[in-house]
Amino acid sequence: MAISASDVVPLSYARANISELADEVKAGAEKIITKNGESYIALIDAQRLDYYHRLERERIHLLLIDEAARGLEDVAAGRVRNARGVIAALKRRRGA
Image 1 (cartoon, helix red, strand yellow):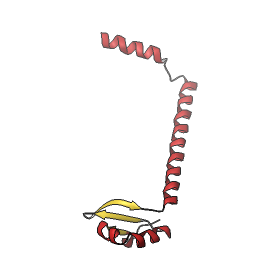
Image 2: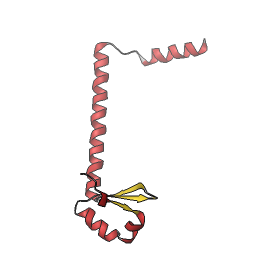
Image 3: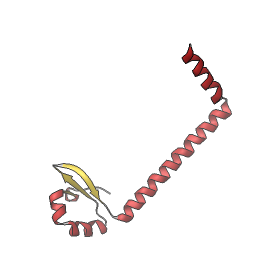
Image 4: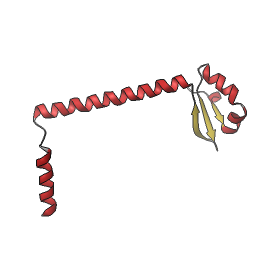
């Protein structure tokens, strides 16, 4: 959804017109509230916020699955080392 100039409102206006802004947001708009001329917070519908959170969790899960797949590829290709051996080598190097 594109943000238009009417969706950017100063904090002072938002304070005075929160009910009207809430109705617009519930109808589908998203509002950017500014403070001292810079974006400060966003006003969005609670259901849309829940949806955004679900999307973020799904994205994190997909990234974890991708990392696991790359790790399994490394194991299959022999590009791994035993953790105990690596730690022992690091300790020997630090002691030298």
